Image (cartoon, rainbow over all chains, first blue to last red; front, side):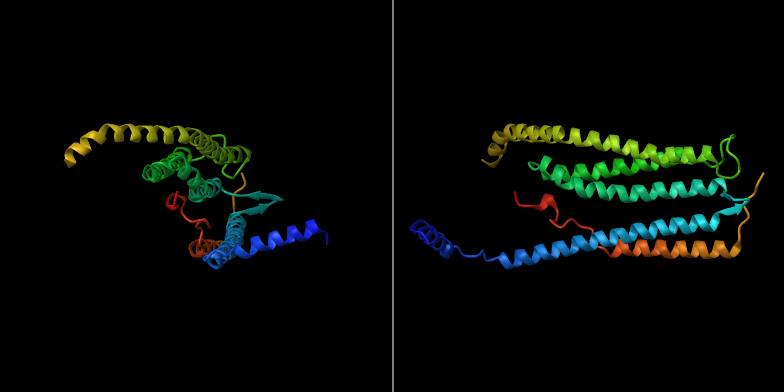
Length: 209
Length: 46
């Protein structure tokens, strides 16, 4: 070992001797392991939920379909009901999913006034569910179009696919718009609260006196 | 025009399986902790 290496080793050891582990080190490591375990469990259970729902859908399709001359037949209202159920399921899943990942973003944008941020999220949730409910009610069919046969055909499949695509497009566009607008609103609320604080400052102090 | 003919056994078994799977999905959703690992970002000390 050269002189330089020995001196380097001594310096590093001396530095390491004065370092003490943080008192909450063990707790943080355990917390990190627990978080990792929870994340893995969430992924496993999420996959199981998706598989169960896909299986349920398949079971319904098999139960209500009839095969005649090599053709799979299903009454038009069954597909309408399945699509409506899918839309409702999509609303119930997509809302919390977006909120879960958007909460950190909103917390950063509204870091100066978190109460406004929380209210904003609740109100955005309300808008989201109202939009979904309105879309489902507007597009649901209680009788088939005149060019639809009594059983599911290409025309109805096209319509039902467009129903699902339409809501995804609307939610996607509104969500994108929300991502762009939210920082502007955050800044606006921050400036407004600063302005109001400055104006209310002297009056507040007069009241105290 | 072809009409759909339902087989009672297939209908009962299919809808029964679907109900069980749907119940399983609901139970899994209800008993899983879906919260983010880092907790609520609004409650973080900044």
